[in-house]
Amino acid sequence: MTGEQIQALLERQREFYKSGTTIPVSFRIEQLKKLYSTVMKYQNEVNDALKKDLGKSHYEGFMCESGLALSEISHMIRHTKKFASRKTVATPLAQFASHSYKVPVPYGNVLIMSPWNYPFLLTIDPLADAIAAGNTAIVKPSAYSPATSEIIERIISECFSSEYVAVVTGGRNENAALLKQKFDFVFFTGSKEVGKEVLRNTAEYLTPAVLELGGKSPCIVDKSANIKLAAKRIVFGKYLNCGQTCVAPDYILCESSVKDEFVKEVINQVKLQYGEKPLENKDYGKIINEKHFSRLCGLIDESKVVIGGETNVFTNQIAPTVMDNVTENDAVMGEEIFGPIMPILSFDNFDNLIDELKNKEKPLALYLFSSNKKHIKRVTNELSYGGGCINDVVIHLATSNMGFGGVGESGMGAYHGKAGFEAFSHYKSIVDKKTWLDLPMRYQPYKSKFYEKLLHMFLK
Image 1 (tube, helix red, strand yellow):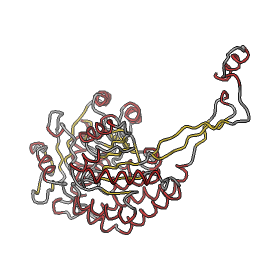
Image 2 (cartoon, helix red, strand yellow; image 1 turned 120 degrees about the vertical axis):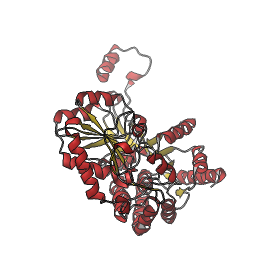
Image 3 (cartoon, rainbow, N blue to C red; image 1 turned 60 degrees about the vertical axis):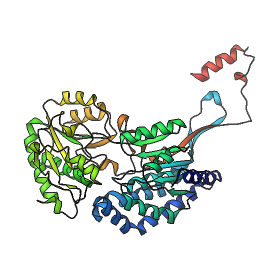
Image 4 (cartoon, rainbow, N blue to C red; image 1 turned 90 degrees about the vertical axis):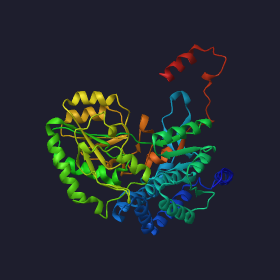
């Protein structure tokens, strides 16, 4: 789609929004129900597309993408009426008599740019929030997951007219053309580098944005942890979607006294969950493309591999790989991995570790496996990160009752459920002043000492 076509599409959406059609809550809920039923209708096609793009099994496709998307849509159907209602707030005595309240209103015309690693979920989730908040939307899925982009376009075109919700496919040219337009709000999920480019473009129009980025999310295992269970859960979260998960544990920080036991259990769990020959496991996925496959292969230090390391250049697959005795100077620690490589580092002093983590970039997620209440309190209270889990990984994003988002280098803003509705809304503060009483103390001339004393009393 050319820049002129994109501009014309956005103009049509502006006119549609100005008509007021999206404002009634009943309309929003009706559209969410349409989206829900259409996603249900195309579930098999969605899972087939995910298999084609990323090698995901149908089970994983439903568990991690279409099922979660349906859950978010359902949540918004149930709660949009409550989210959209105005909220009364206390009125100061000095403003007697009046009624003060906050009312959420849509931003208007929004742009949603989604990534390739969870291409269906991370498109439909924010779209459901945008619809619930009363916006129109242009959706731009990733060019790296073309099969999923195609089914997304089919679902959306079947549900909605293009002046309400539209899909723009394509690559960098389309991305650049979209970012040159003046939207009322932009929602972006992707890499930090592209996120910076998004902000540079939105700054031109002072357009608010939510950025869901990533980073190197640490996973701490101390000596008080249930080592066997920790290994089981970490292996699940690390190798889910072949490690191509923004909140996957990027690297492991294991206390030295239990590291050998932990490594042993991780090796055992890799075999239990993926088999002796993971590349022959029909439910094990693949790296999205040759570029990322080659990058990941360059991060593997064979001298430190304790299990895995096998690759298949024809299928872009890398076996679940564990590297032990890794240091901060190794290549694998120089960037976000975003693949099935688990580096294990060790530490001896927990307090020193926390101080070191405070000096690193703020990650999207952080995980701690521990039964030490002091350690748990320090991690949750002192470290800055988007979100995380105690004694588990990844699952904190699988709920509509908590906002999901980054902080600092890992992003800004949050979504899911109420947080998603709020992200796509502007809250207007309104004072409804009554006319049957008009206190004279605020008007000139300011002569009365009585009024001055009264004003001081009101403003305390």
